[in-house]
Length: 402
Image 1 (cartoon, rainbow, N blue to C red):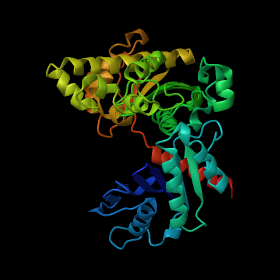
Image 2 (cartoon, rainbow, N blue to C red; image 1 turned 90 degrees about the vertical axis):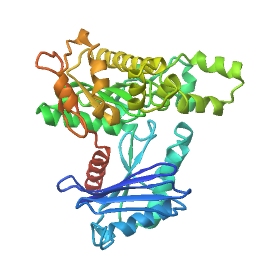
Image 3 (tube, helix red, strand yellow; image 1 turned 45 degrees about the horizontal axis):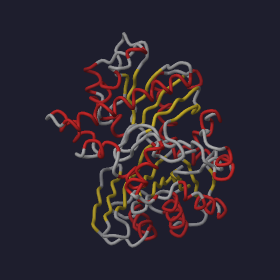
Image 4 (tube, rainbow, N blue to C red; image 1 turned 180 degrees about the vertical axis):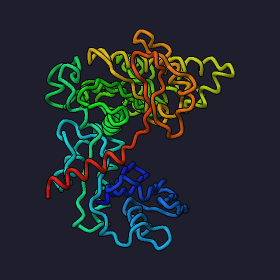
């Protein structure tokens, strides 16, 4: 079975075609700057690379480009588009309406769009991409929505409710939903495979660290706590997002600075986090370099990030009453051995001890245990693969509905 996986943004469209017989990625690519000037990058498993600046007016144009490249004589990987058995779409916000992946219908598409107020940067783009995909590919190819929030639907009410008037939950669905669920699901499953232990016996803390970051407590394969909340703004300090703050900071600033809700939203999501503290960059590598050169604000950002991660790891461990392992994943988690060490060196309370040489070597796609033999709790680096997880969900749903 061949699954085309789509991850759409408002001006971008990432894609992978995966052969589920061997979990091989046949081709991966991205259409960027849709509606602006446009750029396409497309690479096959036999290392045929197509890159070009071209005008991409809409997501429909992007899908037409992808479809043509998939069957191109030089850059293609299949002979006919009918070789695609299903298309799996990543959808960020599904609230508690979508507890599992679903085959996309008109009603499903409508519901995804109606959830846009809770994910204004994501869900409208997903709807646009799904419609464009349906117009491009044959109707016989089923389309599936896989939600980032579904994995967290096992979080108990005591953990997902906020201390607001209960009617805000009843009327507006104000509660913790959590994100990065596809990634957390993948790495927890992968850890069980790597260690040859049943997932149902494990209590794991998964740290997905990138420009957006979240930490998740996974008990017997189920999410029981996570750091992101109603939106991806909550939790750990991030590249440009504030993470958790006293809500009064928002009302205070809005009053003092006369900010509109839109201006406050922009500050919290685009101008805060590592960028806002350091004044240097939202990229941890740039900030660490500046810190090493004596930039005090950069040093503060480095310290704040490691502190934020540590306390949330501890919180997730408490939510499970125990912890069998810590997993690092995501762009920063997989590649920044310095941050991993800063975090773990201050988790001695859990008996964690890092093997410095192994930690330094475990970057650039390398997976494995980075803790020493003396560590009471293993620490592991796993390269996340959300696309493969989406493809697995899609394949399972399609087979179960035949």
